[in-house]
Amino acid sequence: MAPPRKPGKLALPSHESTIGKFLTESGTFKDGELLVNKDGLRIVSQSDEGEAPPIEPLDHNQLSLDDLDAIKVIGKGSSGIVQLVRHKWTVQFFALKVIQLNIQETVRKQIAQELKISLSAQCQYVVACCQCFYDNGVISIVLEYMDGGSLSDFLKTVKTIPEPYLAAICKQVLKGLMYLHHEKHIIHRDLKPSNILINHMGEVKLSDFGVSAIIASSSAQRDTFTGTYNYMAPERISCQKHGYVSDIWSLGLVMLECATGKFPYPPRESIYELLEAVVEHPPPSAPSDQFSEEFCSFISKCMQKKASDRSTAQILSTHPFLSMYDDLNIDLASYFITAGSPLATFNSSNRYDDR
Ligand code: ADP
Image (tube, rainbow, N blue to C red; front, side, top):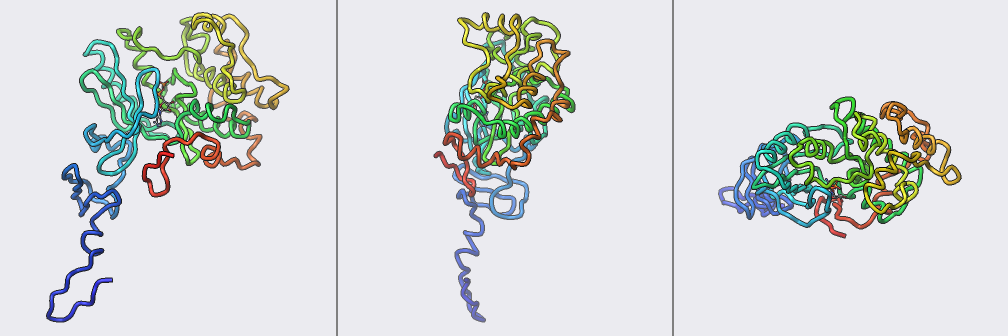
């Protein structure tokens, strides 16, 4: 409490009413549009009070690489590393994907430019891409940070995902696919467990769409991009026309892998033998003695070798498998938190907590 003001005398204002009022939790000094911390001074747009306003995915101008502090490497993918980074001014976390392509300067610039345009997707089932930079031969993509990591990380801990949870996950994946296919008219092209990300709120989002598509479409560097072919639909392998339902093949494989804990094709000597098996052999199916009839049917609707026999994301979204566990009121948030590995997560005060 501030001491009462005595008439005619000057009273010192209390600590809270001076510095405390202007200090954010991160130690940043904030007064109206002025932000000052150890890194200097910044004018930001006015917010009500407290922390600097979080950066929304489309606030491109607010994000610069210099403002991001690297915290640690959280993943290694086929195209480069992924780092957890923190924005100096808003203390917001992001995932920074760094792609180094062994290609001509002009092609790289063009890829970065195209990424900027095509990654501006706005959908709660798709990981937001907040900014994209091109510097010195390296493409850096600032992504919404998903603190549960990917389904591939999650599977390493849980080994298999029981059907009721799988149905809840699949519903969200399908919503992401419907958005990409029907609203953005984009084929994901690289749907696999490491591109399906989860967080402590039970959200499931698709990542990396467009990245591989754009990289793959740039013929100059096709040879330098070592994406995985494991989840590719037969028509893509045999260079026939592929379309939205090519993603549905990949979805079926991912769901089957999550349910059984194993990649559905037995290990082969080489990637060429695997690709041959995908094209030549009958498609994998869910064993009917271990899984519900509905799940087996869902997998079979996805894993039709002939693309025209496969269901679309929209049709699959009404499949009985997705609603058969609705009565259980599945809570994916607590499932991800309790069953998953102790990844870098936020606690409620939004501080970094590397458990
Ligand atoms: P790939 O190249 O195999 O598609 P990525 O490079 O996209 O894989 O991601 C590799 C790993 O990095 C993922 O398995 C995940 O652990 C982590 N990762 C990627 N993006 C994010 C993100 N936005 N938030 C949190 N972790 C991420």
